Amino acid sequence: MELVEAIKGRRSVRKFKAQDVPREKLEKILDLALWAPSGMNRQEWYFVIVRGQKKEELLKIFASAFETFRPNLEKVFSGKAKILEGMKHFFQTYGGAPVFILAYAGKSASGQWDTHSTAVALENLFLAAYAEGLGTVWSDGILVKEPEINALMGIEEKKLVAVVPVGYPDEVPRVPPRREGRVQWVGF
Image 1 (cartoon, one colour):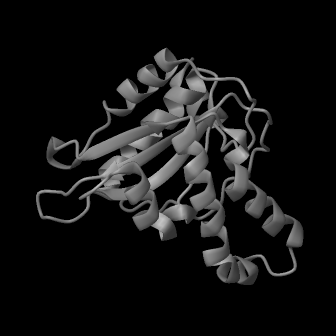
Image 2: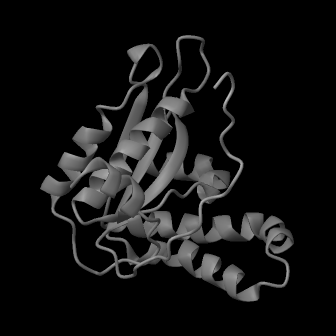
């Protein structure tokens, strides 16, 4: 797959087939994620790949996360009950994805959480997953439940950046238009 095709073809997938993802594919996309650039080349990221019983326990936490920030969503999506119900359903099921990848950041040289480097690694992961026929979506609404998630997973001294459901897509998401006015040229 050409890079341009991967960048322009990748979509956020929120509905997955019940088909399991082979560990070899997961290892491949994670290896490519780890080739991302990072601040001072510290590679301060950490990934937890989850399926089985722990995934089911995470889903219970994710469902409760929706209720925590529901009031804000109701303001943003005022009059759009269908969108809210879709979001609620997603948080309860995570689209039926067979695998979750929890992406964490460690500390930068300055002592701050290096979430930027983890985000860059996630972009590599998303593109690699797409090239392997897998779907993904960035999910960070559940961060309101980070202490519960970390306790369940036994994670300490790391910052949760996103949870990524991974699986074979069971939908073809629409192509959203690109927004204008996002680039400024100076001196050209």
